[in-house]
Amino acid sequence: MRPSTRLNAHPATIAAWTLGIALPVAFIGVFFAWPVATILARGLFPSGALDLAGIVEVLSRPRTIRIIGFTVGLAAAATAITLLLGMPAAYALSRLRFRGRGVLRAAVLVPFVLPTVVVGIAFRTLFRGTPLDGSVLAILAALVFFNVAVVVRTVGVSWESLDPRQEEAARVLGAGPVRVFVTITLRRLGPSVAAAASIVFLFCSTAFGTVLVLGGAQYSTIETEIWLLTTQFLDLRAASVLSITQLLVVVALLVVTARVRGRTTFQRRSFATRRPRRADRPVVIVTFLVAVALVIPLGALLRRSLQVGDDWGLGNYLALATTGSRNALAISPWTALGNSLGFAAAATGIAMLLGLVTSVLLSRRPRSPSARRGLDLLDGALMLPLGVSAVTVGFGFLITLNAPPLDLRASPILVPIAQALVATPLVVRTLLPVLRSVGSRMREAAATLGAAPWRVILTIDLGVAARAALAATGLAFTVALGEFGATTFLSRPSNATLPVVIYRLIGLPGGDNAGMAIAASVVLAALTVAVVALIERLRIDSAGAF
Image (cartoon, rainbow, N blue to C red):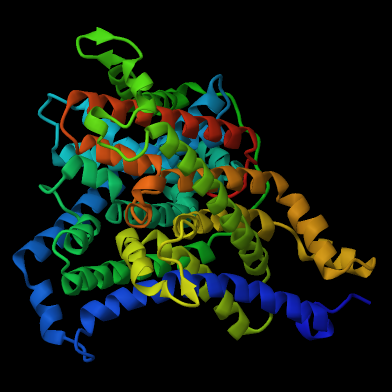
């Protein structure tokens, strides 16, 4: 007789699952929902009642209308270009086998995990002295650079699981390559393409560090405007209105993505790749060009870091052991790097604990419709930190977590907690497809043989997802290492992270400080590339979007 999988069959199991659900819910509630709700309430309910007139006044400001329009237009344009460049690369890297494929796949992933400040400085260095310097096109190029990996990974996972026999049958019947792609391949990839577009639009519309470095005060998006209103003008009402506007857009995109993902069936099976045919040459060439384009900004950054005045040398790197020209910094960049590594390690531990527990929970499909809806809500809640202003979260930490029993305002633990909020959704998105590929019969067979529920999870679920978990660990570490938005609020001068120090350096006068900022960016980028190389070696062909 097959063992029952209902929760009420095992009281200990009920307690374990209850604790598992309580852990991510409590974390999101205390360290995300509470700070964000507090900062929004202070802006929207200044006297205890909803200030509708104030909301209308903020939304009707010409600057607000211009910023919302610019944000939407910029994100839409970046999404379209990213899809245009990412789709050929997704096909080549998922369906074709050629020399250098692994290197290209790593090169495509690197920009996504680079710190946003590094990306901004790289494009600022690349376009220095050209008409594109400080232009909208520079911001657009940086956003595309950052998000191509999302399309390649999200669409590529689905593409490599498609049975190619349908396309081959259509070709035998005389259909051309374009018709086969439009009528067969694209229709089957539709949900994945829509999900990738939603995620890219989300990341582009909420970009902070890249836009702040390249656009400054001239080109503001909703995210950078929230930062400006909060830090420079202390206009919490206007910042709250923009945060709610952004939150509504994020929730709508998450709903669309969830529905699209619900129509996508994940297959762990990956069909064999093949050698490129003559008809595949344009796609392979485009993929190589995209990879080269992704490397050029980093090459320009490395070249500029070796320039010391009119000469070449390592002076900028040697200066990283100092506090800058005229002791502009409280700590040296090397010390800041040590702080970054410590914070990132702590954040990775938090994110992996939450991500593993949540992924195991979400991989189950309970019979109760209400339980399924509850898990879907938990999945959506975990994604919200990716779209809510990091400035709002960081400032909310300072306002809410300042009294017993959670008086953490002066504690450095707030930095890894904020970083873990951003890293946890990516851990879940990496692990969840793998865990969902585990058949229920394997778990039931283990239970029949007498395995306790916790042992089933350890031997079956985590056994299958072990390599994906290692890759997720590396991804969480790189994301935490480069987090910039909330960290600017939470880190003190004595424990500043390297991205914060880099941003301070580029805001100071003097070529020595600028050279140090560029050299520090190269160090941070090199560390990220090393972690990405490790992730690529651990990659499972059909494991997750990232």
